[in-house]
Image 1 (cartoon, helix red, strand yellow):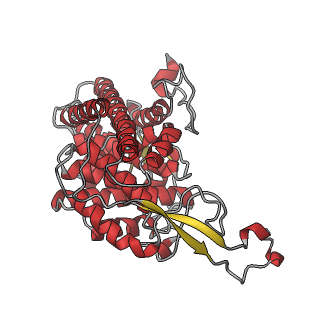
Image 2 (cartoon, rainbow, N blue to C red; image 1 turned 120 degrees about the vertical axis):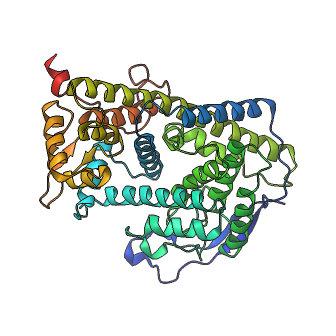
Image 3 (cartoon, rainbow, N blue to C red; image 1 turned 180 degrees about the horizontal axis):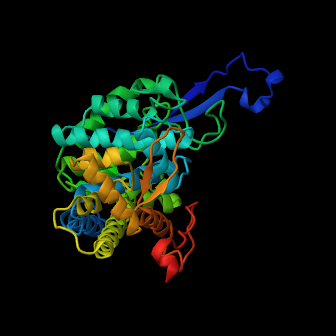
Length: 437
């Protein structure tokens, strides 16, 4: 039975007033840590509206995954949406970075020039961790403690909190209140000795197929955030878990709908929904059912909007590529220039060597194709990082990426109708051919 267990906080006696810590932060006292019910073997009952929301979400996600055919290279769209999801997941944790800045840091890194940008490094680590986790679940469709620990290790390894990477926390953590004790915390997760068992139970639940996929992902994510198993990086790994469940269950096979972009926009609903799942009492109580159903409805609605907007984004990318082909004029159907047009959405900042690797074409052919793409104002040279080596940018893709982030930050799905509710990149300015019209 879930309950808030009373515990006593013993203050750190090495903290004294001489180092500027207020007395209230140096005191001990009682606090309440939450111990959730295990998930495995539990019976969940979706309400009518929530069951309909889940069905809508699954249809929208399946349609996005199946209809990603506008692009000649669907993997390009998958990489773009994976970046969008990782950027948004990082944003929820306070790591704000625009698409252009992130892509430039990634391009610099591809040349062996590590970005001198801590936020970019953390967000790139988030992308790397999510890419790794999805690749692993495709090859071995079982969610394990080891997979989550390795995902966490990759997330934190290049950051300032690397010491916490790849292992469960061994101390009590909390959310809100003082930095020095949990007495005034908004929420206190389970004590550390309960974490391994709860995580094993969570993994067992994630590998069961009894519930609809979206409902399972919603409940699993809420339980993960309730356990808060790590000293840092909980939110980002918890949102990776959503996509692991989608892939394991076969709901997605190509693209990852940017659910975190919607959860970031609806931050209050997101927090309130997670909080509602933390009932006190038996798992079959009206409070438990109502709280879990409330969260499932919130989560499913976010999934639906993420999938619908991602579908519109895919069509916009396809339209950009069509315009590029028209600007290129008469070229052979299997030309290197057209192959580059296919892959650019997935690598909108790139180099000649990167294009050579991705296409398998000769250096002379790549050089000739890039020159033609520059002339057609599809690529433009930009300066990135400190090392030599020309980077080329497909600015229209970067702008579309920026517009997607802005759009999903508006509750009305349109920043002209309702302003973004969180910080977003500035609206792209017209360039090239568009500026001349």
